[in-house]
Amino acid sequence: QVQLVESGGALVQAGGSLSLTCAASGSIWSISSMGWYRQAPGKQRELVAKITGSGTQAYSDSVKGRFTISRDNAKNTVSLQMSSLKREDTAVYYCNVRAITSGRIAFDDYWGQGTQVTVSS
Image (tube, rainbow, N blue to C red; front, side):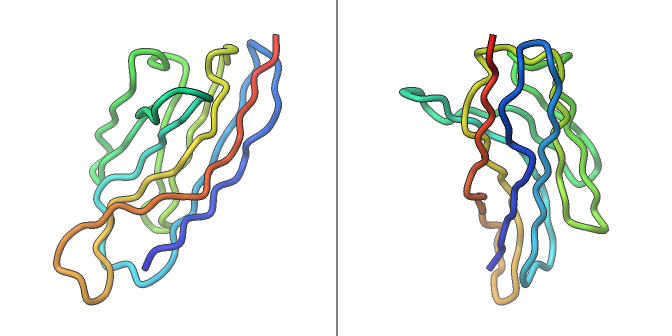
C-alpha cells in the first residue's frame, strides 16, 4: 500500500502564491506519474497538473503559466507551486500517485486525503 501525506493548503489572497507538497511512502517498487487534482464545491474532480518519472509535465489550460509541478524521485515527493492565484482556484486539492507496490504486477492509483486551498478576493 501507499500512503500519501499532503501539506500546504491555506487561505490566501487573490494574486498570491502557495505551494503544496505530497510525500508518498509504503511498499513502493516504482512510481510512474504523480499529479494534483482538485475538486471545487458542486464540481467534478479535475486534473490540475501531472508529471512523469522522466519529468514530462502536463497542465490544465486554466493553470498553465501560473502553476508549476515538480517531483523528487529520491524522496517520492511531488510539489505544486501556485502563483497568481484566482478565486476560481479555490478547491480541495488531491495528490495522485500511480505506483507499483510489493506483491502487485500492475500500476495502481493512490489518492491523498486532500488539502483545502481557499483564495479570497
